[in-house]
Length: 223
Image (cartoon, rainbow, N blue to C red; front, side, top):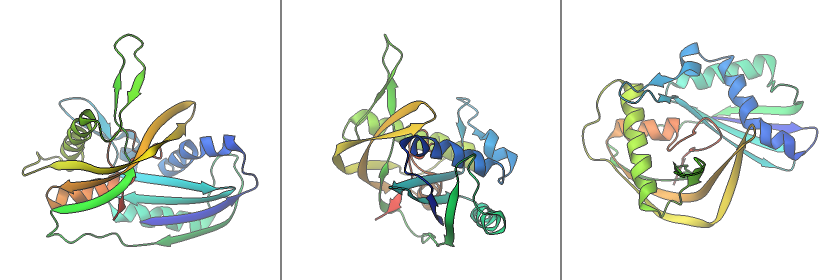
């Protein structure tokens, strides 16, 4: 996992709302084009990415955590920042620091507790607007498990075999809002137990869980 810490000249809210889009765009200037195009699930046509990030800010200090299924991607981003600093559009950054931390899991693992802001949503049949689901909603579990299976098939190019159960065991009462360009996403911080084979658990830890994982969502912290 790559950890980036940087300071901006101002703590303007507009900068916070644009950081996810700007960092995503920055990644695509470094990573292979297939990461921008995504891995297509043959049956549904959905596109999935093999990377994930989480941006946390306090005042004008940003902490960015970036993970990738391919560890060479993390090294490439770190090297690029060290050579040419971190450039996110017109946002001026200073005091940029980078570090690489290992998040390797034992291959014998078949159960793991994680925390994060995992998004799932359904569409209102009349307005066609998204209705974001709480982790305690049974539909949330159904959607994120289905999403995980499709991501597995798209990225790893093989069918999943074995048990898969993703259970929310705690959620915050407080709802959180995330912005990507002009779109708002709603999520609740929650703790999950994932029961699956190693490849699936490793995939979710490295690439995120749920929908919109390359929009500052779905990043999993190992408990």
